[in-house]
Length: 233
Image 1 (tube, helix red, strand yellow):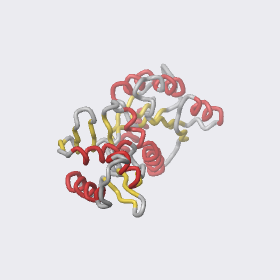
Image 2 (cartoon, one colour):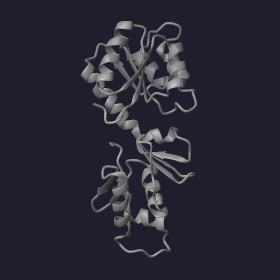
Image 3 (cartoon, one colour):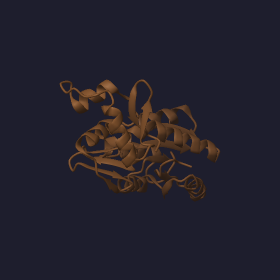
Image 4 (cartoon, rainbow, N blue to C red):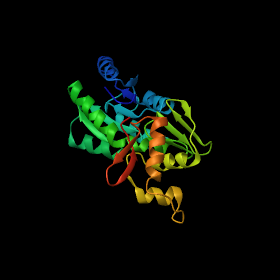
């Protein structure tokens, strides 16, 4: 099962493939939106803002290559993952797919478990980019922990968490680049400032308080280095 409920847009002109793939993806915990041609895929991408799009190459009205090119022009979908899922395995088709902006090219037939593995690998590799499609004032680890710098607000699973100033600033720093390990020196410098003298345990105390309020699994300790906000929550 996926550790976070990602949304996948599936575009294929074969009804049986749509039904088969939708069933398997939903069983893995994904939200699935489907359509049967390129034109509808573009409209669905604008409306649904999926995390990942699976495109067939041969589709009516607009083929998968053209569809990918158009989706890449849509504001806010720059970092949406696009993978081609097609029976066209020729080199020139694959090259065209990548040149159009595709992130992966998967040739049918493929076993569902192998496809799910490929999808999970793509989502894991691109998770950190999710924060880039949020408004500038919002920061997020993977969707269920959101920090609003303008409103001085933290939401965990849509529940508001009240944090004092320094805890908020510390979390804001860590969540600014989910997965990045911030050293203790970086944290001292950016949260407390180089001119402020604080005790060695100051960061540890603030991390402990954040964990008490958010849960132990959000902030990971990298022994001897520093801390990071986990991508896998």
